[in-house]
Length: 339
Image (tube, rainbow, N blue to C red; front, side):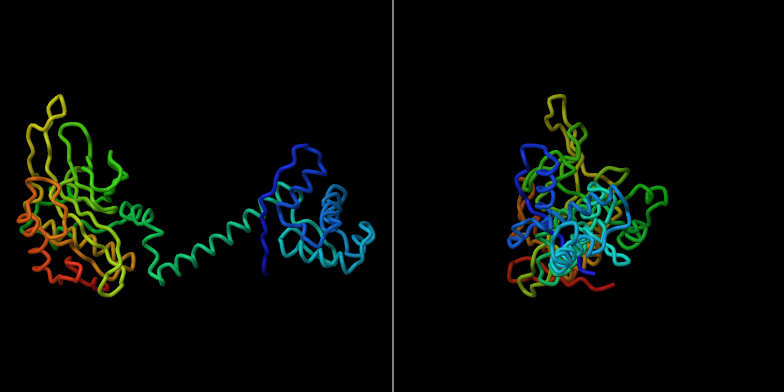
């Protein structure tokens, strides 16, 4: 069955007479057509509404025709319009409003509308994916997805440990989503602070998405990345902006930096390969076909101590050793192998 839902925005009447509000109610539901100058559809709706007070048996088209003073053909025409709108039901040659009062009627129309909108949303998202528009419409969903993403940390440690880690220490590692939304600063190209007290953990958040490798519930390394369209293949891609260990910074009472040290929790791990793998798995889950890494030529040197030589070692040498290929954009790219 096809239900035609019409909602019109009209000026609400200043005087609260029942007749004026009923007319506004029906007009908002699109019951008045341009050719219905004598408001015959509205009059029939009122008759059906009043009939609810007297009986729930409903009225036949002949009874409606007699009460309104219209031909049976005109009555049937309006009844079909009301049924198409989901306001009137037909049973055993009788017509009645769908529910017992106007409040319930609006609830039913709202449910019809929500069902229709949900179906439209599903189809729209499918079309967006097919036309490669999905990223630009669903970045908030991707951010939420990083926090909902689950990956077996035990298998990660098995795959990316340089030597054996004790069971006690293994239980201290975890992966969590990372974005500007769960830090103090908003917007990219800003220092993102896990907290403002001493000791603090500063992360340069220059992309909308990220994951943090945690040790004892504190960040020890991070990867930041964002969605884009691959220049070479026009495939959807996650491009990695940052692969960094996170220093613990000690501040004095005035908030000035006294000391900064790297965590020893990264020592047993090839943490960069681990975090790139996490992004690849997140991409595979979201039907992303490629993963990229910014080259040293394109990465932001956000600190005087973060030199081009360090960036080359972190990004370029890592990409080459892990079979990434340099693209025409100067960055490194690789296809995500389907699971």
